[in-house]
Structures are given as structure tokens and as C-alpha cells.
Image 1 (cartoon, rainbow, N blue to C red):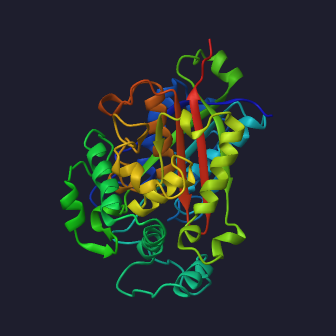
Image 2: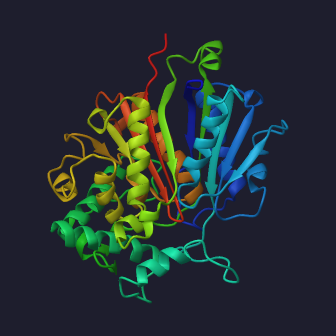
Length: 398
């Protein structure tokens, strides 16, 4: 076992529609990083290592982002892991503390994106998802009019429907829930509430996914300050600290390409990472009070209920239909509004999830607060692939 690791400061920008605000990634990073440092009550000079995540940007953009906070000469690693980039930066920063390489580390993530669906940037070389696409089109008819990502996740939803009889309304209820939750989140890109009928009748992107069940592209940044127990005590942060009690990253298994649409989009990565975290932390899914999970599409939230062990096999539709994953239910999932409504700037998403869960465990989530939240679970997924699952708990330091 390595050193205990605590989150002592978090910060993020409001997520914005690409091009809607006159700012650049250094501005986003400065805002999020400054907020995290202020939240921790420390100077940037105390940060010993940094991991900075982004997907769309030139090499060393991480350093350019950090330089808005200070020029202290610390080691900085640029991180790119598709949609799990933010949590990958967090994972690396945790390793610095856990391994005794630093007492204070910064995880920072940002993205300045383009409008519209994600595409392939480098067309003169092999795409990292070539095997995924080959597997999908070998089983499902390719729809040229639909972007690749909603096809892949939509097909995962179709497989769950075919196996367990789940209806389109169950997926739509996830969209309804997450948009409703976002009304109370000032950092959310969208803050409008929609009825179930609104969700179902929105333009179809790829059956069963309508537009209001798909996350948007976004601009924004998030940051977290991680510290050792020694640092926490030296700086009097005991009452403020939230402990990372378990964290795991997985990449694709042989089973990813075994003929299953659900496995193709990371179901087994999620399941394996979650199991590692439950074993490391000593907490199980039944102990979790609040969850931020990777709802890039409603279909992924639904299958992730099962991947994280929040329900038994085939019971994810019943879980959302029963109201068990919103306020007043068994566990609140995506109180922030999730990616569907809060937005999805790829490099920032994992750190925005971290911020939300830390606010929840510190009883600082205002109108989004989950009563009595003591244990929180985070899930961040990137195709290509990487799944990062993290468990947080109130530190209990005195």
C-alpha cells in the first residue's frame, strides 16, 4: 500500500457551447486552476507535479495552460486518453502522491472544441478506433448519415433492448433525469428541463438515441489539487479533505472484440475497473450515495448501471424506471446533469465529475446536494480505450 491520497481543492469553469464565448484554453485553465488553488487555500508554489489533460491541441499545450498559474519549473505531463482524459490526469496525479514522489500535485484538464459531432482529425494514418469500427460494421449495418459515436453507443443500447426487453422510454428517462438535475447546476452548459415526451420526440440521431439523449461538444476546464496526509495536516486541511479510497484504470480486453456491442463500448473495462475499486476501497455499490458516471449517451448510462454493479444483470431498465437513481431513490446518479446536459469538453469532464463529487461529500453542492452523502463513485470512459473508476469518501481526519 502506498500513501493515502486526498483531494483538497477543486475548481471548474462553466461549460460553454464551442464558439459562444470569447476565450481560449489558457483562459479556461487559469480559471479552473485558480479556483482549485483558492479552494485548497494554497499557493501554486506548493504544487510539486502536474498532469494536464486535453485531446484537441498541439504538444505542450499543458505547459501553456499551467503557465497561467505560475512558472515554477515543476514536471508536467501532457495526457490524452480520449473522453477519459480528465480522469487519466487525475489518475497520474494520484500516483505521484501515492508513490511518494510529491506531497502536492495538480490535475488539470481543458478542451476548446469545434461545433458538431466528433470526427477524425488525422486522415492520413490509422485511426485508433479502426478495430472498433470493423467489429461494429461486421455485425450492424453502418448508417452513413449518423456520426460514428452515437452509432456505437446506440448499438450497445439496442443490444440491451434485444437481450432484456428494455423499451426506448427507459433511455429517454435518463435524458429527462439528467436535464432535470442540471437545472440546479450553474456550471452546466444546458439548464432546461424537458418532459419525457420532449425527450422522445426530439430529433432522432440514431435509434434509440434522440438529440436530447446525446452529450454536446463543449469548451471548459476543471482542476483538482491532490495531497498526502502529511501535507493535509501541515496545512490544516483535515476538515476540507476528501480521500480517494480506490481508483483503477483499465484498457480493452480480448472480449471488447468478441461480437458484443456493449463490450465494444467498454462494458467489460467498466466492470473490471469497478471491481478493482470495490476490492481496494472496501466499499461496495450498496454503500455508494452519489455517482457521477459517463453518460455520453443515455444508452451508456443505462448499461453502466449494470457495469458498476448498481443493479443485477438485465435490470438496468427497471432501475431507471423505478426512480431509484434520482433524488429520493437509492442512489443519485449524475446530480450535475451529467455529460448529456452539463456538457462534455473531453479533457475536463473527469475533473468536473471529481469536483461535483467533492462538493457533494463536503456538503457544498447547494440545490444539488444529496442528503447525508458520505461515499461517492466516479466513472469516466474513453473509447480506444480507457475506463477510470474512482471511489471517494469523507476523510475522517482529525
